[in-house]
Length: 440
Ligand code: MEV
Image: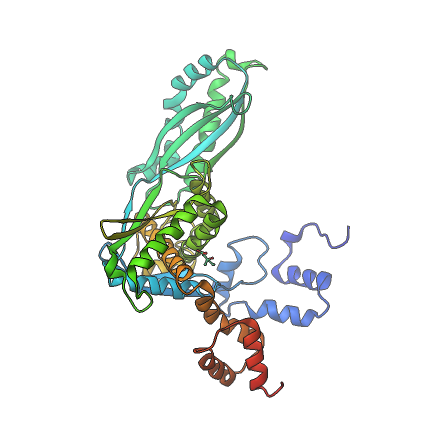
């Protein structure tokens, strides 16, 4: 087969790059200098990044920005955000400032339970399995002692293990459904190690009984893995103020604004096409902080969207109410986050982000992340229901368009001034740049 290779991971970094250049690139020197141009000049730092994953060839930059002025439960934060989308940080900062003057954000962690499952197949009688499970359950927990010792010392560990009969959903399918408290760790490695030990103990102990030793009644472990669906690891954040207090430069008529805003949130509650985009806007804020703090944004994304569909229809993660002249806007989301373990102590910029957030506990971080999501959604829905999204979005995107056309610093200054009072569209920018360069 052309363009395939065996033993690639065993090659040195330079050999890997040379193979790529020889196999896929015509201008090898240009591609090589691009890849090498993104290497860190500090060899030790580069080696650290190389070793995060397999087959590292270079670094892939994302901007790390900050959104200041977030007042959360009476503490002010400057929130670090790693994101490429031009308008996200500007929107978060604007929302933070808006609510800073109106009492800030209130956030509360509602629960912190994580979940993991051992999935297995069993053909025998359920009552026998149930009796065996009750018998072996203490041993399942006992045999994880070496794994759980440190976590227990800090107050966490295995909370419970249940036997679940799923055979109506899939013939002969059962689970050990376990719950965990992992404190300040996201807990993936801890949970998966416990689950693999549960599976080993469960299988080994079953083999001591003749009943489970036969071909027909045999227990076959299929897999042991944590769940990224964590509906019992929940955080809630909200903002509220009197409707008249919403009045600001952008909101001359707070009553009309509040009603339209509430209507927009209701639409996202009932209409999945809108809900997905509405929630995507929330994830703009959430993912950016999750990434900046070295957490697993794919796990968060998967869990959050599953939660949005928990009642059988995909719906909005935020809710709005207007009662007795009070405007309330809130979010409730599952977030499995860590502030110890994983990349949190390894990646220097993650460490910087944690310092910036004043060494948050996992619970603090859940609150901060939920607030970032709520703020982002507030900013998006506010724009959508007032000026429209493009005005702010394109203003922020202006620099990307100018960079795409390699505008000089002088050209940038002139055009940024020009577009302060003119509508930014791709073609308007190209036209203005062409005119400025005297090419029209
Ligand atoms: C763009 O990244 C996010 C928005 O589309 C979110 C929304 O529509 O609510 C602006």
